[in-house]
Image (cartoon, rainbow, N blue to C red; front, top):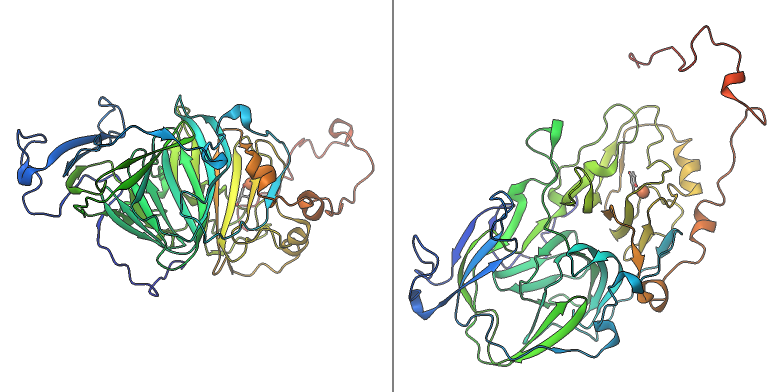
Length: 467
Ligand SMILES: O=C(O)Cc1cc(O)ccc1O
Ligand SMILES: [Fe+2]
């Protein structure tokens, strides 16, 4: 299993469950009983509501939280725009480079001279923030902890995939400690601060402009497997009653704004509700696969999904390729060659990826196979996998790749295509141009000119039911 992480003790305790109703108080009696907004909440606290869905969203999807805090979130001077070229993330579609080519990036650099906010770069995106449709993809690299600084995104939910270094996250709801091979989701609007307790940090972020993540349906799999709801951790209330200045950064329509307030935003003494940040250890993913033949669709590896209005069609799926046994008979076992209507952005947290034996897809690197961009195993993977003896084999041991998959066409920012200087110029040439022809039939053919096959036009007629 990935994610056996006893090296760093987890300093925090959590409440468990995906989409659970949580209630937590750091001072006894801070949560009102039987009501949300008493005339005078206990201990001189203010009640404040944070809604992540419209008030009238059906109960099953409704996400709201009540805070009992020292000072309401509104107690700050006005926000002013930050004037740093990277802080206007150029997240509008008209600024994107739309390219049909397959793209692959060398590992992104570490940079320990900046904080999480200073080292956040938009790589790619789709849709429109103002109408809450689509997604943004970011790379972060930092080494300085955010001290007396917090941020929130009005634009969407942050799904953070750490690749290097632990992140210690303080949020309005409490603390989350997240290591590589774990993920964390910080929903829209929640204020948070990121510290780097183990040194430099680096990773990937999917910002979801539309709705929120849910667990995929399990269909015939039944009531367990894949990511089980019990394995998601939410913080317990933790507050500070600080009077020092705090800079609050706000990401709003792809631009960064800031203000300085004279108290800590992490002053929530108690909260209850369904809208909260959560983490998940990818090592707990219960992987399902074929025990007979053929390579199944990677949708079986979906950890979280953000559905669109079209059934079965996601704005964003978060998919992982964890260590697993491959046992299929008479099967080309790596991913097949394919062209999909869905776009695929992939990253590698550690190890290697079984469809890219030829190297080039490295930890902290990435690839993008956009709508209908042809891809699949590189030439060396093909040669190996089409000749290998098919014994039960464990793949991706000590490896973890992931995919942000989207029904939208993904565009690249200037940073993603040029400024980062990580795009591999020879990706196609090295991966697929070397593929050899193995065809051994005549130079031309037409099905309707073939001699009759005992009256059967299609199929070999042999059946394969008793393999
Ligand atoms: O392209 C990729 O490597 C991702 C992927 C993996 C897989 O097992 C099947 C389809 C697919 O797009
Ligand atoms: Fe693919």
